[in-house]
Image 1 (cartoon, one colour):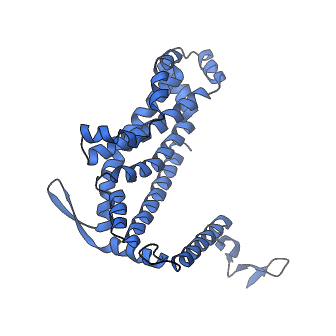
Image 2 (cartoon, rainbow, N blue to C red):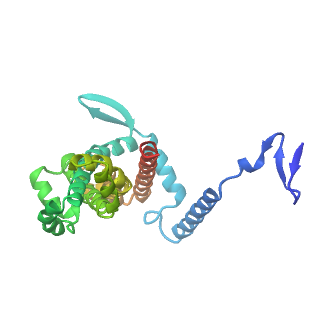
Image 3 (cartoon, helix red, strand yellow):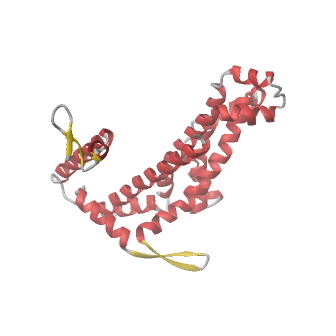
Length: 278
């Protein structure tokens, strides 16, 4: 038996609430937008040669091919069977992860100290104001000379980018922290600066720190791709190398993979944040 609402539309059938099975409006709109994008892409691809703009089907086929093509990853003298797509992704992660951790690990504490200590801020602000506008890729010439082209060089470039993003986000969080919080801490007997930072300031600016880290996670993928254009192995190098050989379907397949990896990393961080900061 099925119950109906006032308009005669079934709401419950065989004991199942049909409303609970409906797709959320946000998801429906997202799927509709994606379908419209793919349709427009397909129409545009039909007006030019495939080596200039492949169709969505061709890109999906190339993606699946790279996902299933066997490859070998050599780590610590051990050969591990993987696929071509995972091999390229692992190569990028070998400089993305160290660079991100290095930049965030240095940027957050320094931003906290600069925002909390007016005296230290006055000493360091001129240097920060001078170096902050310099894009990470501008350091590539020095990186090539210092550490060469490879995982270390690309990680250094990623670290520079994530460092400034996290530093400024943390610094702004401290600057916007209500002074009443510190006054309440002092009235409760918090006198040492270290205790004030640990019990009052850091919990108060946690949203700003998390925002800086989340932004760094996304921006660092952009920096990785740009750094790999200079020859470091990874997904960025594969994108430009396949495009230069007019294998645009493969190039766009790796662009698709990059977008999916970002979505996965962003989702993972938001889940982790929900666990740490319920």
